[in-house]
Length: 379
Image (tube, rainbow, N blue to C red; front, side, top):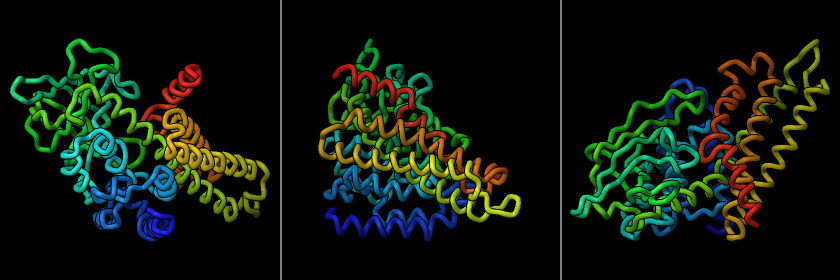
């Protein structure tokens, strides 16, 4: 997109978020569901494929453009973004970066038009570190593989039309070796999706366990047409996705701070607005300073990612700082609201629940520290 095209897209998304999604946040939270008309409009606007290449029906948004859009997506319920997040992020990018041309032509246009892809990497003993992966894919000698194992916390699994399934294909491989990725379509015999998880936050966004009981797929389902590419594919998608998550947290913190300022201006204690109390002002000031720092960091990391200058350390620093920042800003927002901030009908209460998991998924804060520290020591 050129600058004028992107500006128009950004303005359209901003209006959509504020006019259509924000007024229905409580409904989404209480019903644990995104309204069908919001989903349809998101599809019509191209949000299910905006980072995918134009030749496959996407908008080819850069990481910098994605970050700016995520500032807007993060302004409302994170379940809204989760609806298409795996398409434009961790799952879709596996195909963009590693899929064969046939795989891209088959699936990317469908994703851009509203089909859903799911990223099946995490297991009970293999979360942020996939080295404990036990799911296996064994060649049958007749041009097929049989996949056996299970995954957990898989976003959009219950809605998915296709799964990017990571499994070991090399006997005796350990750590990150021997991991391959397969395209598995919904309805394939032996593929079972468990009930949706009951979570603390992000109502309307679904995660599930997924089970593979001798799931038989053709060799053409092997992403990229070769084994042992799964770990690299997963890590590349996750690194890019970390900038995305960091930008979402900037959006969440922006909303939390706005809610806090409005509350401090209007809510009274002892006959005067609580915003006149210096300790409330201090909390607002701390939140604004951290928010500005996170926004600047995300934009700079996105710039360096797009230029190729840094595609590894920067995404981890952005995710580490922005997710932790959002947690602190949300906590202060609840504190500023007092007892009201602990009530379910309050926006900041929902934000506090929603942002908590951002410090866990797509690599915990602790894993980000390890990535950064090890990279610095390697020089």
